[in-house]
Structure formats: C-alpha cells, structure tokens
Image 1 (cartoon, rainbow, N blue to C red):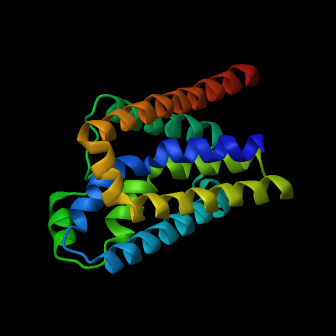
Image 2 (cartoon, rainbow, N blue to C red; image 1 turned 180 degrees about the horizontal axis):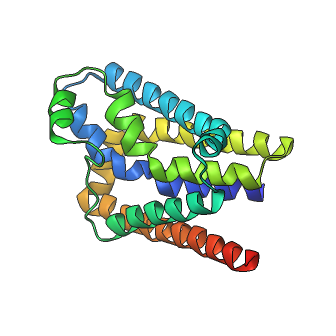
Length: 207
C-alpha cells in the first residue's frame, strides 16, 4: 500500500493534471460535451500507454545508450525540480515543449489527445525518468503489479479531472488553480531534490 501511495503521489505531482485544466478548457472551447469527453478518455489512455512503456522498456533504452541509473536519477531530479520551481513561481509555460510552429498547427487540428495533452504536457521527461528510475529499485512481480496499478489509477484520475475540467475551472477560478499548482509545485521540487540527494549519496557510498 505504501508503494502504491508513494508512486501515485509522485506521478500525480509531476504530471500535475490540475495545472492542465485551463489549457484543456482553452483547447476544447469549441468542442461539444461529447467531444470533450472523448478527448479526455483518449488523453488518459495515451498517458497510460506512454507511462507503462516507459516503466517497462525505459531501462533497456538506458542500457543501449550506456546511461547509468544514477545519471538518470540526477537528470530526472533536475527536470522534476525545475518543473516544480516553474509551478511554484507561477511561470509554468502552458506550451512546455511546444514550439511556435507546432502550437499553431495544434489550433487547426481536431485531435489533441496525444499532442500536446498526453505528451509533453502531462507525460513529459520528468514522469518518464521517474518511472525508469523507480523500476530499477522495484522490479519484483508484486512491485510491478502495484506500480502498474498506480499508473492505471493516476491515468483514470487524469480522465476524471479533464472530464470535469469546465466545472473545476469554474469552481477553483484562476486564483484557485494557481494556488493548487503551487502546492503541487512544492511537492514536485521535494521529489526532484530527493532523487538528486539519493543519487549523490549512492555515488559517495560507491567511492
């Protein structure tokens, strides 16, 4: 249970679906209720696929490129902490990872569930590196089942949040969303720093 709660909380903080609400509302403002529901479902499915592939296959990618888990944890910690600082300071770019040309193309596309919503806005480098590092330490059959369940549940929560985006945006308001995002940002910074500290300690012990 502790493993499930830890991974769920870590993923939820890094993915920050609450912070995606105003962007989702803006991108789907001309959609019908049925279309928004469909986009919410497809986004959640895409996030689940991206995260589960990262969890199971990421380590082989690291091996292929000769990247150590310690290096990944430090890089991931920096990315996660950086995202947290952006959330905490209210400077989180709603188009993170999206250049001007792609942004313009998004506006003319009907399908936004994969890009930009699922990736890079939700499942970005931070969550991917977090899962790869997590698998290295929790790869028993029981741990894998619990971790997969946590990924499934967080994807389902993303669907619920996006499905209710209009209501959440109206209920929280702009200031409410900013407040929640900053709280999540603080937790995200803590997760990123903990990853870096753990990696540095591992290096020191190995000397």
